[in-house]
Image (cartoon, rainbow, N blue to C red):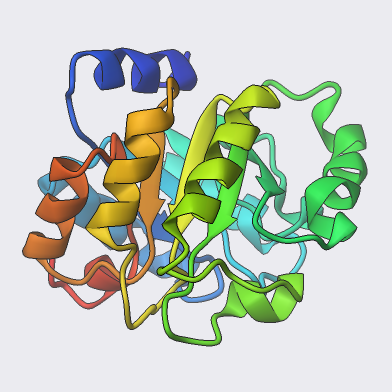
Length: 235
């Protein structure tokens, strides 16, 4: 599953096979913990490891991914907070555009800055529409991106933003409530977005219980990302 990450997600979506990704923030884990973390991920049968964070020191992501690779064969996909987190040690990269915000830095500027690192890279680059949903907290993503999340009440705007991303050629749509969110993405939003999409849907942010995980899947999430629940040994 290391190669053709997008193709595998697309195929799973068609077959309604639900996927799970564990999000690891290099800023919250040490290199010494990589082996133990990898074993835990293997035990819960995760399909992917996402690596990234909002405040990761330059060079740390490269070292962290390199160490993870010594302990796991699970595909590692970069979920970068900025271009400095790009490393060729991983298998793939979510090439994110923050569609819910209007800050050009995260719509196109960071992507341009990443190009010199990607031109000769072996990473599978996956165009991804990233949509922040209000999770009830002032998350790190909001602080860094200086953008306003979409209200959970404004389902129409979330749907239109997701569909616009699809029309712009994004291959995945990612609904994100933010790390440590008090409120996960409302299942009604997931269902409404999924109904209008012809591409796979990723959902993450604040998922702490198996019930929340199941609800995300039931309402149309093709791939669910958990970070906090994994860190706290809940899932």
